[in-house]
Image (cartoon, rainbow, N blue to C red):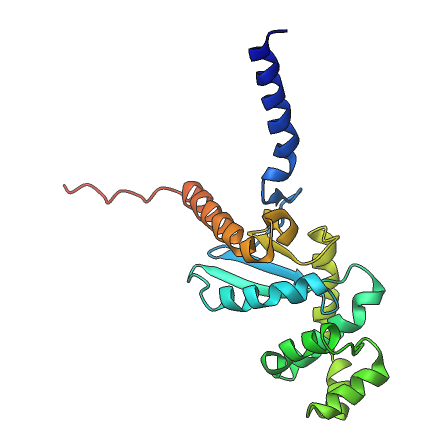
Length: 216
């Protein structure tokens, strides 16, 4: 084999080896249905996940500049019963109308302060210390609306095949993460690219505008 061919083969092998990890996103199979008219971005997360905690500042920054044609949703992942308590926390605080106030505090408690809020006793102590009416919290947690959202979170986790978090899913079709993107700081660069891809796909699939009737 000539030196030129050997070098060419080496370059091809290196490209092949790096290609598997070069694409910063993957495609969901099968794609999931979404509401028409908007591009949907879902963040699947878990309060006890240090990678989700590291990504949270990027999530907050991006959520402040969401394009008008994009709907952003947070969904607490529910792949197993051990994650269920924190799914309850998310939807109970949301139902009480205080999620925005306590979302980051819950993250901090779990990841910075070492408070296991999945433990009911520790959670109630933490809630009381942070100004939440524990009796009202427990009552809300048992409500039908919270139970319905918890069931929906489990269903979405299964449908979207979420086996690791954080995961960002765009338009029910594409997904990415910090690992795929290369770092937490690059995740939303990829999300923006996927949004643009979805936008072009939606435009291409839209039926052409009908021509105005000819004048007689």
